[in-house]
Length: 116
Image (cartoon, rainbow, N blue to C red; front, side, top):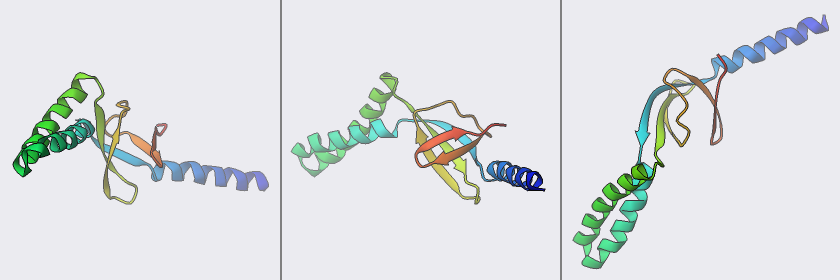
């Protein structure tokens, strides 16, 4: 009888893990980090020329920062994920190995693929 209870509890745990998995809806390349750093740097350098210079410098810095990130091969991947409660979330990761429709589990900042 105890073995039956243990088997039923084990099956319930395994089934609940697949039910509560997040699903990847979309996968996009992402250069937001490079653009952000470039925009901030351009804003500070452009501020020497006043408020207009700061805005122009920030815009040019955003474009150049994104390009530098791409040229350096440091692009990230943006995943659009449907959480188990039905809400939509976005996750940025340097690991581009996940595919659309794949189920993942999140533990803080760590993303792991669920076994099919």
